[in-house]
Image 1 (cartoon, rainbow, N blue to C red):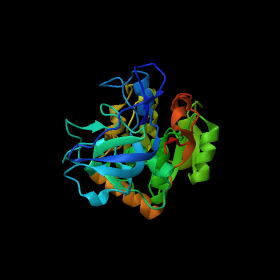
Image 2 (image 1 turned 180 degrees about the horizontal axis):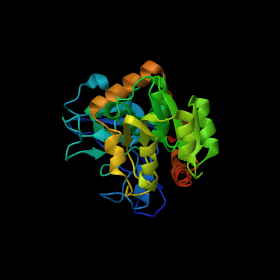
Image 3 (image 1 turned 120 degrees about the vertical axis):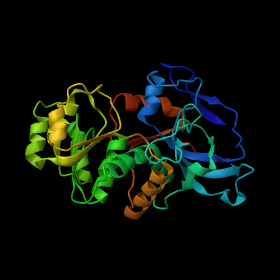
Length: 332
């Protein structure tokens, strides 16, 4: 089969001929039609991720058709169009993942190939209103955003929601999900163009975080926020505390700008704030996310579609922070 291999950190992705995998007793073999990039793939290429292993087929997101099943899996699944949940072995505790938890695409080979094997418990029927490319764009980002926004932050209709870093996949899903839930949504971005595109999606306003007074302007525009979804952390996190309403929740799923070193504890306890961490999600989160997406007919925002052999160009586009939405690989 054709596959995209990362042979070592700091190297370009390469297309190679790779042995077609065979499903174990509890797995299925999926013929992939489309896959999608996440920042996780870029961090692995840069060597900035735990548990590095080379060579590796990257890719956590994928959509395709079940071609074969393991001996413990019913044959009637063969031929079904499916979307893959990349959150593997979460465990039975909804509060946090198990010690054996892993994400598809490292340490196991992922979706940047013509075929992938995954546990049968991690495949789900493709939402009927989505194309293969749209469905492939959904799993990791959609799951992360859904858990952060609903399972953790308990977002409700009429909440005022701030999503930082509009343009990235998870942030855009958080925007779309919050809007579908009836919330009033505002954003930040380092690009005025991306803020304008977010407004076209339905957000009420946004501020460029490169402007010194961004948080003051947001305070004037929205008066404060009930839910804040963040991926940056770092020095700007203290401004999110200032923007939070009494009793608000700040949930963060990333730390792209570094550690949080400057919080005022008095502000946090006096305002009765909830500051929560979140990552990926459980099987229950994934099921609920798919139901929500199907109910509201949500379609992922796709930035650009590349052919499999142009995977390195897709990764370079992500590295340049040019994208607004998901970068997708068309495989079959």
